[in-house]
Image (cartoon, rainbow, N blue to C red):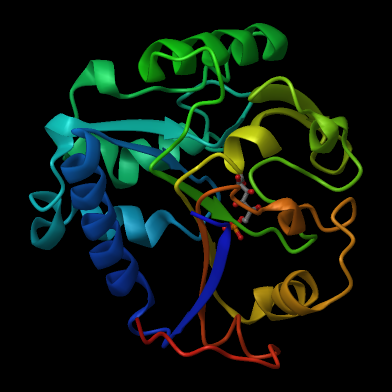
Length: 251
Ligand code: 6PG
């Protein structure tokens, strides 16, 4: 399979419901293919309504949680009950409301020393995927920052040039905080990577990343290119408003 990049532009009203349906489909596809659905959740605010929908009565029984393993593509180095924690956001919106077995939930330990937390997560990934090479996720969810970052791959940081370790600690000057983040090798090993961007605030950065000059050190989301997988940009009409070639969600 070659690297594929797709754009799906959705009406704002349909954005999260379509994503929830596609998530259910992706989970079923992965479980059908190899008995497991391994997904890495994104942090930030964009995915929260998706998590809420997946937790709702309409959807929560449609994912085979017994065959699902949940990971995180990045985390802030804060305790799990901190308001900034990606884990806390996902737990409150989704994980507390679905029957995911506790040993199939893989939290990044934001409360620990960043380097040790990154090491232990790399070990946890190796054990969960039973591999010493790069774990290949069925799905990695990501957001898009207004400065072009994704996961916690921020412009000009050393994490952008990490090719050996799948998860690293990275101090983010702009945020004055340590983060843990997936790196390019694990992101680009995935079967599918979905970048979620919605709202007018993301229109300019979406246009720069998708149609502007290729400058990934400045716009890290431009490094996303699954080697043998599919990259899907999910945008609502507002976030896609500045795109020249607006592909309409058809497939
Ligand atoms: C985080 C995310 C980060 C996020 C973007 C977009 O830990 O915050 O990993 O990469 O996806 O900053 O954030 P919003 O969805 O809140 O716009």
